[in-house]
Amino acid sequence: MTDIVLVLNAGSSSIKFSMFAVAERGPALRLRYHGEVDGIGSDPRFVVADADGKRVVDQPATLRCRSARDHDAVLSVLHAWIAGHSDDLRIVALGHRVVHGGERFAAPVVVDGAILAELDKLVPLAPLHQPHNLAAIRAVSSIAPQIPQVACFDTAFHRTQSPVAQLYALPRELSATGIKRYGFHGLSYEYIASVLPGIVGDGASARVVAAHLGNGCSMCAMRDGKSVATTMGFTAVEGLPMGTRCGAIDPGVILYLLTERGMSVDDVTDVLYHRSGLFGVSGISNDMRKLLKNDSPHAAEAIDLFVYRIGRELGSLAAALGGLDVLVFTAGIGEHAAPVRARVCENAGWLGVRLDREANIGGGPRISTDDSPVSVWVIPTNEELMIAQHTLACMHAEPARG
Ligand code: ADP
Image: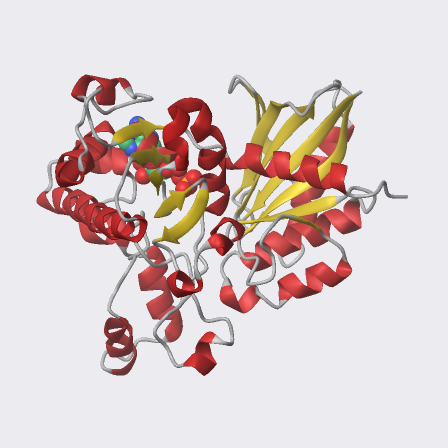
């Protein structure tokens, strides 16, 4: 029998999962399987790969229904696969990525009815993600109520920021109701902060900026492994331009679209979240790989804007830190798009960044020259492992159930 920590990342149309085997001794967790059910609500497929990336399942997921209870149906498929698995897997705990922990949750928490009710209150702050995260928790509670569940929050890592860094210059009575900068991608930055000392050595406690450049993009200034400032704010649409999200925009544009262009709130939401960013500017794709291969001037301008905005935010975060010692690139674009990294580093020469071109093309991990005042690194993120570690730690901290 192998004890497993199951990690779930539940979105609107997909549920991604990872299974980590718990070592008999010691805290080590080893990835065993990962996969997803995507196409929920249309033609769902159930895909599982082993730790080497070899597909062991790829089949239609037969869902019992396709509406509000889709998460139940999807998780039943996964539960049945685990139950029937020849390796005798036993889920000892389940960790969820939950986008919003609000002001209260600064650390992962074992979920019970009262906490779920608290998390429900945060749905209006993250209406596109939080309901799906919570639906997965409820689905597991009904399918396998004996399995303890831990919620790990994308916002939690940023709760160390000073009150000023979290404040919008809005009337105090609005700020007091929770309209403030929360920041996201916290599990990714926490993972980077946790591995940085082993990679960078003493520099890990210095002034660090990490750039999480995936479909969602943000940057985080860290000192002593703690978040000091970040580019995302009240929602995950602020800050850098992303795959399809616009990033920072004059709020006046939104008012103009609503009042002068007669757009509905849904239309504007669609523009800001799904039709902007790399996709909107290029008119071609949200996929950096496609844009880098495309000769069109609009693809080039989308990349120019992306690089320009990263440079502007880097200067701003360096100002929040009072300087810069370490720069880290992570997530899909950060880990794989050498031309984007090169351009960001060249523009950051004024901050003391000296790029080692060959190391950058080779993917690092260190991509700055030996004499560069700022050391620059490519470090793959691992949010799932971070969630699994938190989940296990919460289990050890909790008194035994039952
Ligand atoms: P998510 O935020 O959904 O987890 P990822 O971290 O996987 O996304 O990042 C997706 C982005 O990474 C896409 O823009 C994709 O084009 C880009 N990407 C992945 N591999 C490469 C590559 N080899 N070269 C350039 N961009 C890449």
